[in-house]
Amino acid sequence: MTKENVNIGTKAVWAGEKEVLVHGATQVPVVVSVAYNYDDMDEWYEVATGKKKGHIYGRNTNPTVQAFEDKVKILEGAEAATSFSTGMAAISNTLYTFLRPGDRIVSIKDTYGGTNKIFTEFLPQLNIEVALCETGNHEAIEKELEKGCKILYLETPTNPTVKITDIERMARKGKEAGAIVVVDNTFATPINQNPLELGADLVLHSATKFLGGHADALGGVVCGAKELIEPIYHYREINGATLDPWAAYQLLRGMKTLKLRVEQQQKNALAIAQFLEQEELVEAVYYPGLESHINHDIAKKQMKGFGGMLSFAVKGGMDAVRILLPNLQYANRAANLGAVETTYGPARTTSHVECTPEERAAVGIPEGLVRISAGIEDTADLIQDLQQAFAILKEQTVLVGK
Image (cartoon, rainbow, N blue to C red; front, side):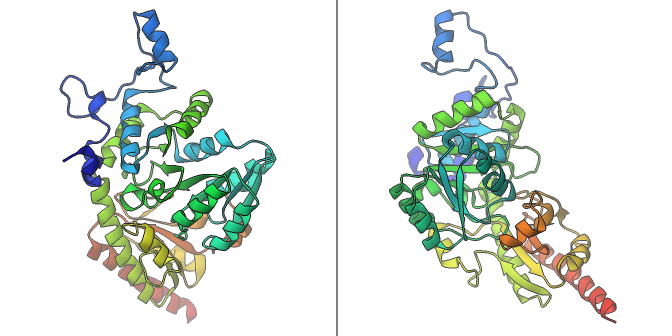
Protein backbone atom coordinates (compact mmCIF):
# COMPACT_ATOMS: atom_id res chain seq x y z
CA MET A 1 0.00 0.00 0.00
CA THR A 2 1.43 3.35 -1.04
CA LYS A 3 0.90 6.60 0.87
CA GLU A 4 -1.25 7.87 -2.01
CA ASN A 5 -3.65 4.92 -1.61
CA VAL A 6 -4.17 5.38 2.13
CA ASN A 7 -7.69 6.41 3.11
CA ILE A 8 -8.34 9.87 4.49
CA GLY A 9 -9.13 8.70 8.02
CA THR A 10 -5.68 7.13 8.26
CA LYS A 11 -4.10 10.25 6.78
CA ALA A 12 -5.82 12.36 9.42
CA VAL A 13 -4.03 10.32 12.09
CA TRP A 14 -0.56 9.89 10.55
CA ALA A 15 0.07 12.47 7.84
CA GLY A 16 2.62 15.24 8.17
CA GLU A 17 4.09 14.26 11.54
CA LYS A 18 7.10 12.00 10.99
CA GLU A 19 9.52 14.74 9.98
CA VAL A 20 9.18 16.63 13.28
CA LEU A 21 9.12 13.68 15.70
CA VAL A 22 12.21 13.51 17.93
CA HIS A 23 13.72 11.19 20.57
CA GLY A 24 11.42 8.35 19.59
CA ALA A 25 8.32 10.31 20.60
CA THR A 26 5.02 9.20 19.09
CA GLN A 27 3.46 12.68 19.33
CA VAL A 28 4.52 15.96 17.72
CA PRO A 29 6.40 18.16 20.22
CA VAL A 30 5.25 21.67 21.04
CA VAL A 31 8.28 23.75 20.07
CA VAL A 32 7.97 27.12 21.80
CA SER A 33 11.39 28.50 20.94
CA VAL A 34 11.19 31.85 19.18
CA ALA A 35 14.66 31.56 17.61
CA TYR A 36 16.90 28.74 16.33
CA ASN A 37 20.65 28.57 16.82
CA TYR A 38 23.21 28.11 14.02
CA ASP A 39 26.95 27.72 14.56
CA ASP A 40 27.57 27.58 10.82
CA MET A 41 27.00 31.08 9.40
CA ASP A 42 26.64 29.82 5.84
CA GLU A 43 24.03 27.23 6.81
CA TRP A 44 22.13 29.92 8.74
CA TYR A 45 22.08 32.10 5.63
CA GLU A 46 20.87 29.24 3.42
CA VAL A 47 17.99 28.51 5.78
CA ALA A 48 17.16 32.21 6.14
CA THR A 49 17.00 32.64 2.36
CA GLY A 50 14.98 29.48 1.79
CA LYS A 51 17.73 27.54 0.04
CA LYS A 52 17.76 24.92 2.79
CA LYS A 53 14.99 23.55 5.00
CA GLY A 54 14.96 24.72 8.59
CA HIS A 55 13.68 27.37 10.97
CA ILE A 56 15.13 30.71 12.02
CA TYR A 57 12.37 32.69 13.75
CA GLY A 58 8.93 31.87 15.15
CA ARG A 59 7.02 34.48 13.19
CA ASN A 60 8.21 32.78 9.99
CA THR A 61 8.02 29.06 10.66
CA ASN A 62 7.88 26.56 13.53
CA PRO A 63 8.20 22.73 13.60
CA THR A 64 4.85 22.16 15.34
CA VAL A 65 3.10 24.55 13.01
CA GLN A 66 4.77 22.87 10.03
CA ALA A 67 3.33 19.51 11.06
CA PHE A 68 -0.16 21.02 11.17
CA GLU A 69 0.27 22.62 7.76
CA ASP A 70 1.59 19.38 6.27
CA LYS A 71 -1.34 17.37 7.61
CA VAL A 72 -3.95 19.72 6.14
CA LYS A 73 -1.98 19.93 2.88
CA ILE A 74 -2.05 16.16 2.52
CA LEU A 75 -5.75 15.86 3.40
CA GLU A 76 -6.61 18.48 0.77
CA GLY A 77 -4.28 16.99 -1.85
CA ALA A 78 -2.33 20.24 -2.13
CA GLU A 79 1.26 21.01 -3.03
CA ALA A 80 1.76 23.52 -0.23
CA ALA A 81 0.03 25.14 2.75
CA THR A 82 0.53 28.00 5.16
CA SER A 83 -1.26 28.73 8.42
CA PHE A 84 -2.58 31.71 10.37
CA SER A 85 -3.63 32.78 13.83
CA THR A 86 -7.35 32.65 12.93
CA GLY A 87 -9.65 31.70 10.09
CA MET A 88 -10.32 35.35 9.29
CA ALA A 89 -6.57 35.91 9.06
CA ALA A 90 -6.42 33.14 6.47
CA ILE A 91 -9.20 34.78 4.46
CA SER A 92 -7.99 38.38 4.72
CA ASN A 93 -4.30 37.58 4.14
CA THR A 94 -5.18 35.55 1.05
CA LEU A 95 -7.29 38.36 -0.41
CA TYR A 96 -4.83 41.14 0.41
CA THR A 97 -1.93 39.15 -1.04
CA PHE A 98 -3.37 39.23 -4.55
CA LEU A 99 -5.76 42.20 -4.74
CA ARG A 100 -4.61 45.69 -5.71
CA PRO A 101 -6.45 49.00 -6.25
CA GLY A 102 -8.43 48.78 -9.47
CA ASP A 103 -8.83 44.99 -9.26
CA ARG A 104 -12.16 43.22 -9.22
CA ILE A 105 -13.44 40.31 -7.12
CA VAL A 106 -16.55 38.21 -7.72
CA SER A 107 -18.25 36.33 -4.89
CA ILE A 108 -21.63 35.39 -3.45
CA LYS A 109 -23.90 37.38 -1.14
CA ASP A 110 -24.24 35.11 1.88
CA THR A 111 -20.68 34.32 2.85
CA TYR A 112 -19.68 34.32 6.52
CA GLY A 113 -20.36 37.72 8.10
CA GLY A 114 -16.70 38.57 8.64
CA THR A 115 -15.90 37.74 5.02
CA ASN A 116 -18.88 39.79 3.88
CA LYS A 117 -17.55 42.76 5.86
CA ILE A 118 -14.26 42.57 3.95
CA PHE A 119 -16.24 42.62 0.70
CA THR A 120 -18.61 45.44 1.64
CA GLU A 121 -16.44 47.62 3.88
CA PHE A 122 -12.69 47.11 3.57
CA LEU A 123 -12.07 46.24 -0.09
CA PRO A 124 -14.10 49.18 -1.46
CA GLN A 125 -11.93 51.51 0.67
CA LEU A 126 -8.96 50.24 -1.35
CA ASN A 127 -10.69 50.95 -4.67
CA ILE A 128 -11.28 47.25 -5.28
CA GLU A 129 -14.56 46.49 -7.05
CA VAL A 130 -16.66 43.75 -5.45
CA ALA A 131 -19.49 41.99 -7.31
CA LEU A 132 -21.69 39.92 -4.99
CA CYS A 133 -24.10 37.52 -6.70
CA GLU A 134 -27.09 35.59 -5.45
CA THR A 135 -25.76 32.33 -4.05
CA GLY A 136 -26.75 29.46 -6.31
CA ASN A 137 -27.40 31.69 -9.31
CA HIS A 138 -24.58 30.28 -11.40
CA GLU A 139 -25.62 32.21 -14.51
CA ALA A 140 -25.34 35.52 -12.65
CA ILE A 141 -21.89 34.59 -11.38
CA GLU A 142 -20.79 33.63 -14.88
CA LYS A 143 -21.98 36.98 -16.27
CA GLU A 144 -19.92 38.82 -13.66
CA LEU A 145 -16.91 36.64 -14.45
CA GLU A 146 -17.18 37.56 -18.12
CA LYS A 147 -16.52 41.17 -17.10
CA GLY A 148 -13.16 40.03 -15.73
CA CYS A 149 -11.88 39.64 -12.18
CA LYS A 150 -8.75 38.87 -10.20
CA ILE A 151 -10.36 36.52 -7.66
CA LEU A 152 -13.47 34.35 -7.64
CA TYR A 153 -14.25 33.65 -3.98
CA LEU A 154 -16.69 30.89 -3.04
CA GLU A 155 -17.94 29.49 0.26
CA THR A 156 -19.80 26.21 0.03
CA PRO A 157 -21.73 25.20 2.04
CA THR A 158 -22.39 28.77 3.16
CA ASN A 159 -22.54 30.02 6.73
CA PRO A 160 -25.30 29.93 8.03
CA THR A 161 -27.78 29.12 5.25
CA VAL A 162 -25.78 26.09 3.96
CA LYS A 163 -26.37 26.95 0.31
CA ILE A 164 -24.26 25.11 -2.25
CA THR A 165 -22.31 26.38 -5.24
CA ASP A 166 -21.17 24.12 -8.06
CA ILE A 167 -17.39 24.33 -7.56
CA GLU A 168 -16.41 22.52 -10.75
CA ARG A 169 -18.61 24.70 -12.95
CA MET A 170 -17.56 27.96 -11.30
CA ALA A 171 -13.87 27.03 -11.21
CA ARG A 172 -13.92 26.35 -14.94
CA LYS A 173 -15.57 29.69 -15.68
CA GLY A 174 -13.33 31.48 -13.20
CA LYS A 175 -10.19 30.21 -14.86
CA GLU A 176 -11.53 31.17 -18.29
CA ALA A 177 -11.80 34.70 -16.89
CA GLY A 178 -8.22 34.56 -15.59
CA ALA A 179 -9.30 34.54 -11.94
CA ILE A 180 -7.71 32.83 -8.95
CA VAL A 181 -10.46 30.55 -7.62
CA VAL A 182 -10.61 30.46 -3.81
CA VAL A 183 -12.97 28.17 -1.86
CA ASP A 184 -13.73 28.31 1.86
CA ASN A 185 -14.09 24.62 2.77
CA THR A 186 -14.65 25.08 6.51
CA PHE A 187 -18.16 23.60 6.67
CA ALA A 188 -17.49 20.60 4.41
CA THR A 189 -13.99 19.71 5.73
CA PRO A 190 -11.54 17.63 3.65
CA ILE A 191 -13.51 14.54 4.70
CA ASN A 192 -16.50 15.57 2.59
CA GLN A 193 -15.11 17.85 -0.11
CA ASN A 194 -11.82 18.60 -1.84
CA PRO A 195 -12.17 21.81 -3.88
CA LEU A 196 -8.73 21.49 -5.47
CA GLU A 197 -9.84 18.26 -7.13
CA LEU A 198 -12.85 20.16 -8.48
CA GLY A 199 -10.68 22.83 -10.10
CA ALA A 200 -10.18 25.44 -7.37
CA ASP A 201 -6.76 27.09 -7.03
CA LEU A 202 -6.83 27.68 -3.27
CA VAL A 203 -8.80 26.08 -0.44
CA LEU A 204 -8.94 27.57 3.03
CA HIS A 205 -10.30 26.68 6.45
CA SER A 206 -11.07 28.25 9.74
CA ALA A 207 -9.18 25.49 11.58
CA THR A 208 -10.84 26.69 14.79
CA LYS A 209 -13.94 24.81 13.69
CA PHE A 210 -14.09 21.19 12.48
CA LEU A 211 -10.36 20.63 12.03
CA GLY A 212 -9.64 21.32 15.70
CA GLY A 213 -13.05 20.11 16.77
CA HIS A 214 -12.83 20.90 20.48
CA ALA A 215 -13.43 24.68 20.62
CA ASP A 216 -10.11 25.26 22.39
CA ALA A 217 -7.75 26.61 19.71
CA LEU A 218 -7.89 29.36 17.10
CA GLY A 219 -6.29 28.89 13.69
CA GLY A 220 -6.60 29.16 9.94
CA VAL A 221 -4.94 27.55 6.94
CA VAL A 222 -4.82 27.90 3.15
CA CYS A 223 -3.64 25.22 0.69
CA GLY A 224 -2.83 25.15 -3.00
CA ALA A 225 -0.03 25.26 -5.54
CA LYS A 226 3.37 26.32 -4.24
CA GLU A 227 3.51 29.33 -6.57
CA LEU A 228 0.33 30.70 -4.96
CA ILE A 229 1.10 29.74 -1.36
CA GLU A 230 4.55 31.34 -1.35
CA PRO A 231 3.32 34.94 -1.77
CA ILE A 232 0.55 34.33 0.80
CA TYR A 233 3.16 33.02 3.25
CA HIS A 234 5.35 36.05 2.55
CA TYR A 235 2.45 38.42 3.22
CA ARG A 236 1.66 36.61 6.47
CA GLU A 237 5.26 36.45 7.72
CA ILE A 238 5.65 40.20 7.27
CA ASN A 239 2.20 41.18 8.56
CA GLY A 240 2.49 38.77 11.47
CA ALA A 241 -0.73 36.72 11.75
CA THR A 242 1.30 33.69 12.88
CA LEU A 243 -0.25 30.50 14.25
CA ASP A 244 0.83 29.83 17.84
CA PRO A 245 2.64 26.47 18.30
CA TRP A 246 0.41 25.50 21.24
CA ALA A 247 -2.66 26.10 19.09
CA ALA A 248 -1.03 24.15 16.25
CA TYR A 249 -0.54 21.20 18.59
CA GLN A 250 -4.16 21.30 19.74
CA LEU A 251 -5.36 21.47 16.14
CA LEU A 252 -3.10 18.55 15.21
CA ARG A 253 -4.46 16.48 18.07
CA GLY A 254 -8.02 17.31 17.10
CA MET A 255 -7.48 16.35 13.48
CA LYS A 256 -6.62 12.78 14.41
CA THR A 257 -10.32 12.16 15.08
CA LEU A 258 -11.63 14.36 12.26
CA LYS A 259 -13.17 11.55 10.20
CA LEU A 260 -14.82 9.91 13.21
CA ARG A 261 -16.24 13.21 14.42
CA VAL A 262 -17.55 14.32 11.03
CA GLU A 263 -19.26 10.97 10.45
CA GLN A 264 -21.22 11.24 13.71
CA GLN A 265 -21.85 14.97 13.31
CA GLN A 266 -23.44 14.57 9.90
CA LYS A 267 -25.47 11.60 11.09
CA ASN A 268 -26.85 13.81 13.86
CA ALA A 269 -27.33 16.77 11.52
CA LEU A 270 -29.48 14.74 9.14
CA ALA A 271 -31.59 13.36 12.00
CA ILE A 272 -32.11 16.85 13.43
CA ALA A 273 -32.99 18.24 9.99
CA GLN A 274 -35.53 15.46 9.40
CA PHE A 275 -37.09 16.09 12.83
CA LEU A 276 -37.29 19.84 12.25
CA GLU A 277 -38.90 19.32 8.83
CA GLN A 278 -41.82 17.61 10.56
CA GLU A 279 -42.10 20.11 13.43
CA GLU A 280 -45.17 22.34 13.05
CA LEU A 281 -43.50 25.36 14.68
CA VAL A 282 -40.66 25.36 12.14
CA GLU A 283 -41.04 27.49 9.02
CA ALA A 284 -38.01 26.28 7.07
CA VAL A 285 -35.05 23.91 7.42
CA TYR A 286 -31.77 24.29 5.56
CA TYR A 287 -29.57 21.21 5.20
CA PRO A 288 -28.03 20.01 1.91
CA GLY A 289 -28.65 16.39 2.90
CA LEU A 290 -32.41 16.89 2.63
CA GLU A 291 -33.95 16.19 -0.76
CA SER A 292 -36.00 19.35 -0.25
CA HIS A 293 -32.85 21.50 -0.15
CA ILE A 294 -32.62 23.74 -3.21
CA ASN A 295 -29.05 22.65 -3.98
CA HIS A 296 -29.31 18.99 -2.92
CA ASP A 297 -28.36 17.62 -6.36
CA ILE A 298 -25.20 19.76 -6.57
CA ALA A 299 -24.23 18.79 -3.02
CA LYS A 300 -24.71 15.12 -3.85
CA LYS A 301 -22.47 15.50 -6.90
CA GLN A 302 -19.50 17.23 -5.25
CA MET A 303 -19.65 16.16 -1.59
CA LYS A 304 -18.95 12.76 -0.04
CA GLY A 305 -21.18 13.64 2.92
CA PHE A 306 -23.40 16.60 3.76
CA GLY A 307 -21.65 17.83 6.90
CA GLY A 308 -22.63 18.68 10.44
CA MET A 309 -24.12 22.14 9.84
CA LEU A 310 -27.74 23.12 9.36
CA SER A 311 -30.07 26.00 10.15
CA PHE A 312 -33.77 26.58 10.61
CA ALA A 313 -36.34 29.35 11.02
CA VAL A 314 -38.87 28.97 13.79
CA LYS A 315 -42.35 30.48 13.73
CA GLY A 316 -42.50 33.47 16.02
CA GLY A 317 -38.97 34.64 15.19
CA MET A 318 -36.71 35.77 18.03
CA ASP A 319 -39.54 35.65 20.58
CA ALA A 320 -39.77 31.90 19.98
CA VAL A 321 -35.98 31.50 19.85
CA ARG A 322 -35.70 33.14 23.28
CA ILE A 323 -37.90 30.35 24.69
CA LEU A 324 -36.65 27.41 22.66
CA LEU A 325 -32.87 27.67 22.96
CA PRO A 326 -32.56 28.15 26.76
CA ASN A 327 -34.64 25.00 27.29
CA LEU A 328 -32.23 22.75 25.37
CA GLN A 329 -30.23 20.59 27.78
CA TYR A 330 -27.57 19.19 25.45
CA ALA A 331 -26.53 22.31 23.61
CA ASN A 332 -24.11 25.17 23.92
CA ARG A 333 -25.64 28.51 23.00
CA ALA A 334 -22.46 30.03 21.63
CA ALA A 335 -20.77 31.70 18.65
CA ASN A 336 -18.81 28.69 17.47
CA LEU A 337 -19.22 25.58 15.34
CA GLY A 338 -17.57 22.28 14.51
CA ALA A 339 -17.04 21.21 18.13
CA VAL A 340 -17.84 17.83 19.69
CA GLU A 341 -20.70 19.46 21.60
CA THR A 342 -23.85 20.45 19.73
CA THR A 343 -24.06 24.23 19.44
CA TYR A 344 -27.04 26.46 18.67
CA GLY A 345 -27.07 30.17 17.92
CA PRO A 346 -29.06 32.80 16.02
CA ALA A 347 -27.20 34.16 13.02
CA ARG A 348 -27.58 37.65 14.45
CA THR A 349 -25.29 36.75 17.38
CA THR A 350 -23.01 34.24 15.61
CA SER A 351 -22.10 34.24 11.91
CA HIS A 352 -23.49 37.70 11.09
CA VAL A 353 -23.21 39.59 14.37
CA GLU A 354 -21.08 42.21 12.58
CA CYS A 355 -23.96 43.01 10.22
CA THR A 356 -26.99 45.20 10.76
CA PRO A 357 -30.52 43.71 10.64
CA GLU A 358 -30.92 45.35 7.22
CA GLU A 359 -27.68 43.79 5.96
CA ARG A 360 -28.76 40.38 7.23
CA ALA A 361 -32.16 40.71 5.59
CA ALA A 362 -30.52 41.71 2.31
CA VAL A 363 -28.70 38.37 2.14
CA GLY A 364 -31.74 36.33 3.15
CA ILE A 365 -31.06 35.86 6.85
CA PRO A 366 -34.13 36.48 9.04
CA GLU A 367 -33.56 37.59 12.63
CA GLY A 368 -34.97 34.33 13.93
CA LEU A 369 -32.70 32.06 11.87
CA VAL A 370 -30.92 29.56 14.14
CA ARG A 371 -27.67 27.85 13.15
CA ILE A 372 -26.98 24.36 14.48
CA SER A 373 -23.60 22.70 14.63
CA ALA A 374 -24.36 19.07 15.38
CA GLY A 375 -22.01 17.42 17.87
CA ILE A 376 -21.04 13.81 18.44
CA GLU A 377 -23.65 12.98 21.10
CA ASP A 378 -25.99 10.01 20.73
CA THR A 379 -28.56 10.89 18.08
CA ALA A 380 -31.59 9.83 20.11
CA ASP A 381 -30.64 12.14 22.98
CA LEU A 382 -30.40 15.18 20.70
CA ILE A 383 -33.81 14.46 19.16
CA GLN A 384 -35.42 13.94 22.57
CA ASP A 385 -33.86 17.19 23.73
CA LEU A 386 -35.43 19.05 20.81
CA GLN A 387 -38.78 17.37 21.45
CA GLN A 388 -38.93 18.53 25.06
CA ALA A 389 -37.77 22.06 24.17
CA PHE A 390 -40.44 22.39 21.46
CA ALA A 391 -43.05 21.04 23.89
CA ILE A 392 -42.20 23.90 26.27
CA LEU A 393 -42.35 26.38 23.40
CA LYS A 394 -45.81 25.11 22.38
CA GLU A 395 -47.07 25.31 25.94
CA GLN A 396 -45.84 28.87 26.40
CA THR A 397 -47.18 29.84 22.97
CA VAL A 398 -50.61 28.58 23.96
CA LEU A 399 -50.47 30.46 27.27
CA VAL A 400 -49.49 33.68 25.51
CA GLY A 401 -52.29 33.14 22.99
CA LYS A 402 -54.81 32.85 25.78
